[in-house]
Length: 253
Image (cartoon, rainbow, N blue to C red; front, side, top):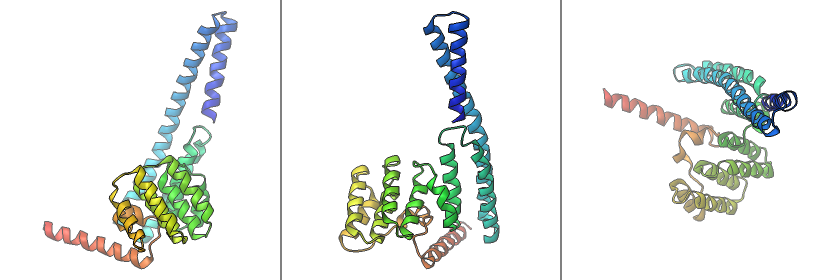
C-alpha cells in the first residue's frame, strides 16, 4: 500500500539524515524515524479516509431519496450510487482495507437490485468483516449449488463477526436449503453458545428439531435483503408494511 511505502521511506530518510549526516546517536535517530513514520501514516490515512467518506456519503445520500421516487427512478439512483462508489476504488492502493470496504458496498448494491452476476466479483473482493455482504456471497454460492464455497464463505464471515444472530441463522438456513438439516441444527447450537439466550436462534432451533422450516421474518428487513424468500412472500411483506404504515397515519389523524 502506498501509504505504508511512503511512511517507511520517509522514516528511512529521516534516520539516514540524523544518524549519518548529522551524526546523532542511532537510538535518537531511530526514535525520530518512528515518529515521522507514524505521523506520516496517520496523516495520509486521514486524508484518504476523508475523500472516501465524502464519496460514500454522497452515494448514500442519493439512495435515501428512493423512499419518495418511482421504481424506475430507484434503479437509476442505485446505478448512480454504484458509479460514484467506483470513484473511491482509485484509493484502494493507498490505504489498507479500503478496496475491500468499497467493493463490499458496490457488491451489496448490485445484489440488492438482483444483478447477482455483476455483484459476484465485488462481493468476492469485499471486506470479510462486512458480514452482510459475506452473507450475500454465501447465498449466491447456495443458489449456484456451490455448497463448499458457501460454507467457506460463511465460516470466514463468522471469524470476523461471531456475535451476529442473523449471520448464524442465515448460515443455518442455507445449510437446510442445501439439504443438511442436521448441520443447520448444529450451526444454531453453535450460535447459541456465542449468543446465549438469543430469541431468534432459540425459536428456529426448536423448529428444526421438530422437523419444521425455519422462520426468518423476525429479523425484518435485514433478512429480506438476502433475497431468499419468494417474490410472492416479499410482495405480501411489502403490502403488510404499507398497510401498517397507512393504519398508523390514520390513527395519528
